[in-house]
Length: 500
Ligand SMILES: Nc1nc2c(ncn2[C@@H]2O[C@H](COP(=O)(O)OP(=O)(O)OP(=O)(O)O)[C@@H](O)[C@H]2O)c(=O)[nH]1
Ligand SMILES: [Mg+2]
Image (cartoon, rainbow, N blue to C red; front, side, top):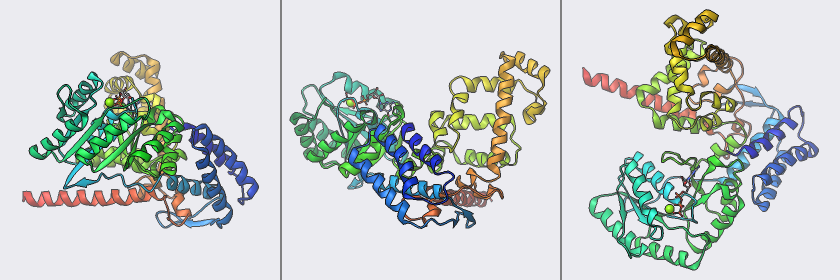
C-alpha cells in the first residue's frame, strides 16, 4: 500500500541526511524524488505542482529550529532533513484533510446512500459500514437497490447474514426509489436507527444512472451520500469523483482497494480536486477492513513513519479490557528484555486478530520486513514448536542447543532448521525490542513514552513545527491512551467497591 510514495520520500530524506542547511539547491534535489513518486503514484498534475510549491516555500522560508522540545518536554536536536520531512507530513495531511469521519444523522438515525461506478466496491462497503455502525451500538438495515444484477441482491444478503444485519430487497419490477422508500418506512416502523442503501453501478456516468440516483435521493433524503471510489483507478477515480460531484451533493468518499494498490495517488488528490473529503478507506475484501480516514495517519504512513495511532485503534477494536492490560504488561516485560517465547506466542496471536500482518507492520515504523515471517500457516508451526519446549527453554531460548533443537523438532513434527530459525528470529526480535526500549520509536508509541529510556527519543515532527497543523497524531494517541488507561483503572476500582 502506497509504496511508490514512501520510496520517493525516503529518497528525499536520504538526500538531505547530512545536510547542514536547507538551500534552494538541496531542496530542489530532494523534491525531484518526491515529484517523481507523486507522478508515478498517478497524482493529478496540478496537485503535484501545488504541493511541491508549498513544501519548497515553507522549507526555504521557515527558520529551522535545531533545538526543540519533544512530546515529553525534553529538548532534542533536530536536523534540517527532519524539518523538511515534518513540512511534508503537514502538507500531505493538509492536502487530504481536514476530515470529519463521523456520519451525519437525521432525526437520530444514520442514513447512507452509496453511489459509484460498477465494481468499485459499493456492496462490500455497504456491509462494512453496517458492521461499523453495529460497533457503534446501532441497529442497521441494509437495502439492496441494485435491480439490474440478480446476483447483486444475493451478494448483499450473504454479506448481511455474515454480520447478522437484515437486508431489505424489492419485488420483481420494483423501481429502486420505491424499494428504498419502503425500506426507510420499515426502518422507522421496526426501530432501525441506521440504514445503508446499496445502489447499482454503471460502466460510465450516464443520464439514466444519475436520474435513478436523483430519484432515490428525493425519495429518502439520505443524511449521507457517499461516493465509493476504487484506488486502483488512479487518476481516473478523481475524474469520476469530479463528475459525480457535479451532479450530486456528495458528503464524502470511500476509497476502496487501497490494499491492492502501491500507488495511492487517488487518495492524495481527490479532496484537492473535488473538495469532497475521503471519510473511509477500504483495505481488504472482508467486512472488517474499513478504516475511518485520518489524513495524519496516512501522511505518516506515506512518509514511512508508520501510523501508531491507527494501530492502537485497530488493537482496541479487537481486544477486551483484560487483554489490553495483559498486552501492556507484556510490553513492559518485553522492554526490560524479559520476553519469553510464551509471551511471543501470545503476542503473535493477539496481533493476528487485528488483520493482515502486512498492514499491521506497515503501521509500525521500520517493521515492514517482518510480515512474511509470521504470515499464513507460520503461526501454527510456531505454536507447535513452542509447545514442544520445556518451560525453562521457553523462558530462556538461549538454552536451546543442537540436541535440544533436535528433540523439539521431533516433538513438534517440524524440521530442526525450523526450530533453529524460530529461536534465531526470536532472539533477533528480542534484541530489537531492547533497542526500542532504550529510546527511539517507543517514545512515539502511545502509552509507552515513559518506558523509552534515556536514549533520546526520536523526533515527533509536530514538535518541530510547534504542533500546529496536521502533525502530532502520535501525541494525541498517547494522551487518549493514557486517558483510557485511567478510565480502566477507575472502572476496576468501582467494580471492587461494588463487590464489597
Ligand atoms: N482487495 C480489495 N477488494 C475489494 C475491496 N472492496 C471491494 N473489493 C472487491 O471488489 C469486488 C467488487 O466489489 P463489489 O462490492 O461487488 O462492488 P460493487 O461496486 O458493488 O459492484 P457492482 O454492484 O457490480 O457495481 C469484489 O470482488 C470485492 O471483494 C477492498 O477494499 N479491497
Ligand atoms: Mg454492488
